[in-house]
Length: 74
Image 1: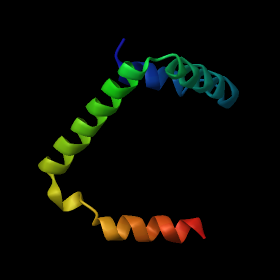
Image 2 (image 1 turned 90 degrees about the vertical axis):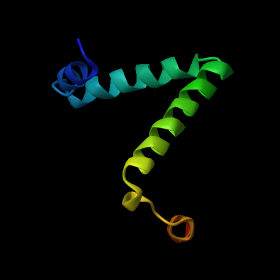
Image 3 (image 1 turned 60 degrees about the vertical axis):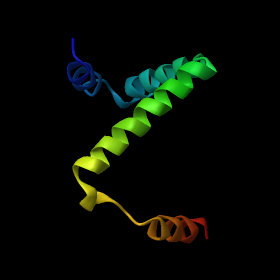
Image 4 (image 1 turned 45 degrees about the horizontal axis):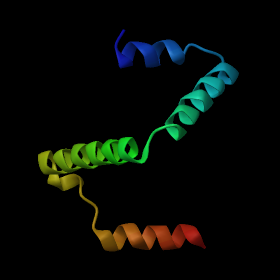
């Protein structure tokens, strides 16, 4: 079963069951070692960098990101 298949099946669950599955998945991440967490974040950073390299037009200037973050804080 692929991840796409698994997600499609999970989305057929009731909202309550999906919430329980989500909670168990999140709890399983708490059990990861610091090295496993670091590795996962590195993979995500690399994925995002490749996506940005593939389509630089999707980049958002840091000043815009920070401005929006400050605006949401208020």
